[in-house]
Length: 262
Image (cartoon, rainbow, N blue to C red; front, side, top):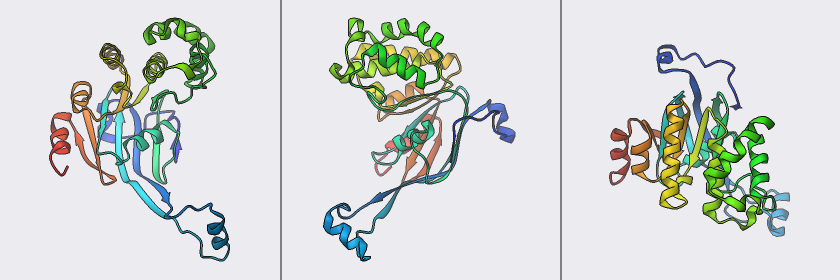
């Protein structure tokens, strides 16, 4: 189940003192089907007709994940490759759905989950700004106001009128990040995008994240950089073997995650 918005913050009893609830993840699991052989070969299709076809097995990277996120928190998701961090962010963004459990999200979401997602290759940078800002919920007037700041932040100059198929990965990252942060989100989701681009742009992104934090924006980020999690996040959630293995201040969670065997 995915609820794109809550009209009112969920009732959380004593936790109300922490501020409005922005995300609630309740017992969420995600299953993927894994085939031991290619299911669409003619031989395998014929075998399936007689009941001897390829039987998929289920793989659950996430099994029973539960946590709440309150307004103004900056949370870093940590865990080894394949543990389901990016899958969890996609489900919170609404681009994927849990197999079990429920996710509720309140407010405007700005997902920055993969380079160039939502960009049409033959559209110019300016056209992609209009399309993606509309998808993020900005009105035509808001888009018009945001166009120039987005172009300046992305540092693309005349390339804003160039089709994005000619952009490098760094240019795509700059444009995607610029659009996301200028959409005035209630919840910003970031998946490893800060690792792309030169040092100066990364520092510029960090400075903008700090501005958003001061404005009360809630941020969830995936990063393999312990330094980034330590620097930017006030809370870390460690996912291990499909479960929440740790949830607390980065200074407490990161040593557990980074220790051998963690």
